[in-house]
Image 1 (cartoon, rainbow, N blue to C red):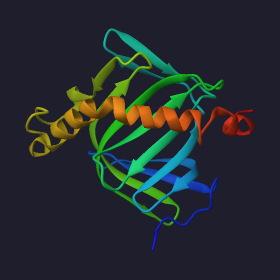
Image 2: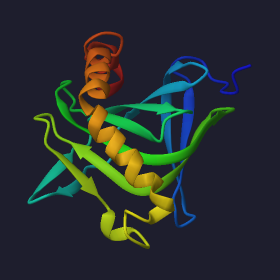
Image 3: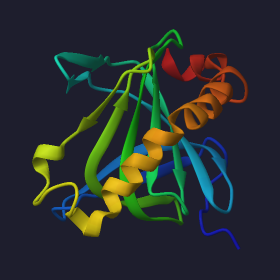
Length: 178
């Protein structure tokens, strides 16, 4: 039995359990739920900027993400697009213990994130927030997960981009974005 109880486009809470114990929640809409994977839609309500290398990436209000979560993968991914459907970037959270219950997608965040720009450049984020070196943090499991994501980036993003051109085409979201 699948433990996520929501209809397509129904409201689902993304609950991120931060490493420091803080809980952060976002209200999203369900796009697809399977036994091992959930895809959510989230409209960005407040502009935010991330420092990436020598530059910065801004995700403006009115843009959106299709967010992918898997029970059996040590990451989730947000695929950001602007209000016209143009790719802004992808953001991978290194995570553990992702599960789905009731109207919630819950995961434990492991601090390290990977920001990938549309041109393929990528940046490891938040390493300065780790309580110890990335090599030893969580017995090296986060470093290994990050390396696996980097090694698989092209394959993962090819699938996400294919979804963006197909089942999650921008036209699907236009009524919500107005």
